[in-house]
Image (cartoon, rainbow, N blue to C red; front, side, top):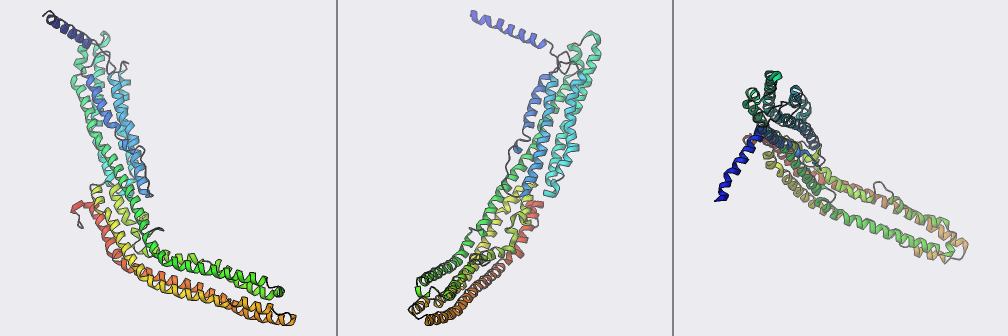
Length: 507
């Protein structure tokens, strides 16, 4: 019971202490007396500052990996706007927070900082923003610039309210000082001139700032989100194109299954001929009676020289065969909007729609992005059919090449035996007659040998060129429907969706 009687005494002491503390004058708003409701200003300023801090979060440390310059250009502009404006808006809340606890007694100076911060933010929207966002129009159209303009006009309502409220508070503070004169400022004078209503207007203006800033943050963050989606899409599409017609694509590998055996057979056969001719030269060098038969040795060297000349041919045999793969790539020119993606009006339409952040940006992106992959798969299938049609022709030609190469062996296969015959002759005159006769015959054979190699090389060039042309014709015909109908329609659909969304004419 005794402890319970002590409680009212303790409560009374606490209340008395609180009343004494709250009654003690605190300098605020550059005045020497407490201004009613000031604590609410600091709370509202802090809340607004938290919202302002989010304005440029999404433009910090962003990374663009694809080569599409549009993404870098737009991201740079968006980042410039957000990074330049965020500190200006933050300066407002910092200045008002400082003003609410200002003890300087310099009313004009203290309010000038806060009013100047508001004026700087207004000036940015009126004077700086138009120059920053102007390059967006040729890049992505008017939707994104219009959103920026609207978001700053939205914030402008709060800035105007802040400017009016601060101006009125400044006038009231000066009135309070003037009324007090030399007698000193009292709480009564302050409460009568710097009213709760005026402070409440400032609190409302700060809350309005907090309420309007998120729109700008949304425009910035949603645009950066769309840029991220576009970047990922371009990387995926680039890889799909490479997988379809790139060096290691399935189609190129299909072509290689035709040309590789042909190239291998040619290379292996020529190596065998080179080895056999080398063996022949070694045999000739070991025939002592023929050591002085220089003309015969020169003719034998000429046989090998034909292989040397062939190895120096431009283009090389490997490059001639590679022309068929190049023909496959060239055939896709008919639908280049699907392959040359960084210069493609079709890809650009989808990317500008997404990055432009219009009303239907992501809607249209998700609606049509997979069409690109569908069309690429369609083309790959049609091209594969064309390659399979060409395969039997080249396999037949490979058999022809084998016959052309095999016949080369007959031009020198008996030379070693012939040389043995001459080498057995001891009479100098008869030996000379033998070597001269064989040199004349071998010289004619060597000429025929060289001509057949030249004709074989030319035949390879002509047949690969013909095969490439057949591939181009087949692929072009198979893709004509894409080029004439599907690609233009997809471009029209994307543009219609960007303008009208699901209600567009082509939707």
